[in-house]
Length: 224
Figure 1: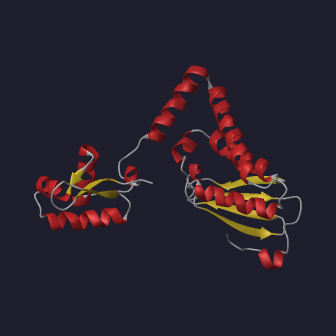
Figure 2: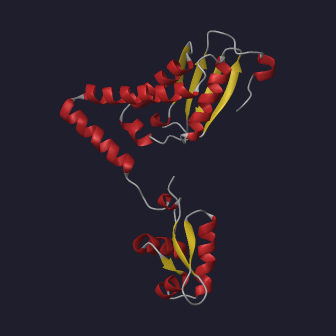
Figure 3: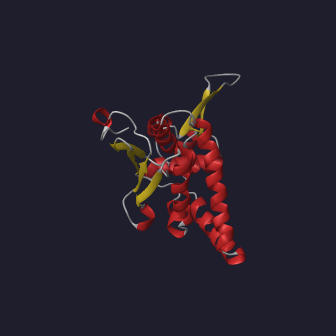
């Protein structure tokens, strides 16, 4: 997720990106404002994890605080990864045909299957596997929510799509994701009933198991 940074904070971030390490005194001189005013903005940026500070000791006098970009700073500066990915996939299609791109998506599905399978207990009940899949999707940035519909069916809703532009241009991305869920959950069926790539507000999957999930009275419509 890109963080939009404007005003003085944005200028501070740009200066630290260009010059790497600056003191509050340096920044105040460049921005033509008081050092106290600069420190106020720096403290806010440090709190948000966008800037970090280091005390540099000198032979004489008090240590000098030097500021640099923090761990979350990359979220401020625009990235063009998704556009580049789409362009590369289009180039592969032009050069080698649709089958080559389909093969790439198959490889991605197989890689994710191995990754997810390692974290899902293959002996666990369907409910536990589905909950774990939901946790993994949340960690991968999909903002997913899980809801039990009846004693054999779940509904998984994803409110964010990290690969939206790719999915919008290449339907195989969504098709393979549906297959991935079915395979890794060992479900009877997985149906994609809403898709952001088709203009919907979210992606929604209906997951049906052959065996009952448990006590429908206690679990029906529960959200996780």
